[in-house]
Length: 284
Image 1 (cartoon, helix red, strand yellow):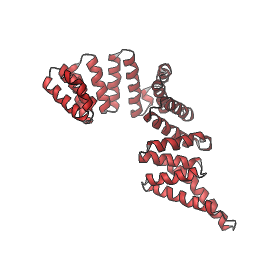
Image 2 (spheres, one colour):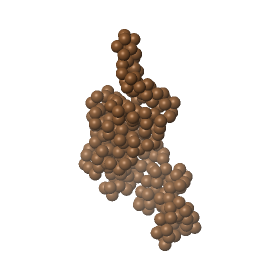
Image 3 (cartoon, one colour):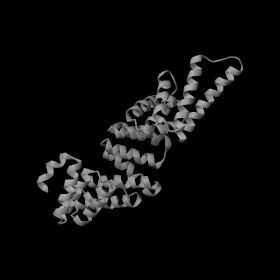
Image 4 (cartoon, one colour):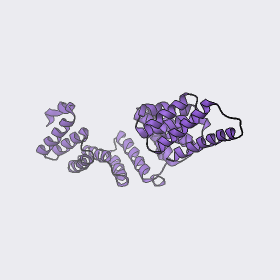
């Protein structure tokens, strides 16, 4: 991971300074020596894929008076280990003192926090982090994600303005697909189902995912394209077979296409995954 290489470079510099002091007879305190040793061990653990253990070491260093980079390393390890709560805590500490880091490290921290904030449903935090990242990086993908953050935070005017300022051709395919996703969402909110479908299909051509097929099927159903909706939802279900919502939508699409037996089968599969779907039993 490039960010670890950057952080570790700073750590190695500090270790080299400590060694130089010892070599000249000046010495360093036992606490400082212990911190250097623990920090090097933490980087070794991270480098060998043991991020859960490395996170504990970095967080301990940061709490005992370490640097912002210790918190950033702790956050990076927490993200790698899938520990969302610890990642948020560490990133909040990083952002509180981000002026002490390089621009690249700040951008990494802001992007990381934006993703974690979105996962936690903190739309305002998501938007602010992407705005700050875009201001530092100036790159189109961060501007796109800032526009997306604005929509999540409820400011559709800012969201549309941000989307209008970008062109999908200037974005990598993955982000161009997100640009079309955002366009589709705004079109649906405006009641423009045909326009929404066109953007969803553009997104699928760039990056085909089950949830995009699901959205395609839902919009096709809205337009009365029941056979096409059934096909799209079948593809979505193949990609995400354990998703009860997709199965229920497929059941409705099959029923609308004149396939009541297949509709009941899809509904039963959804019910097996999510007993709450029993509320829909009367439809099938």
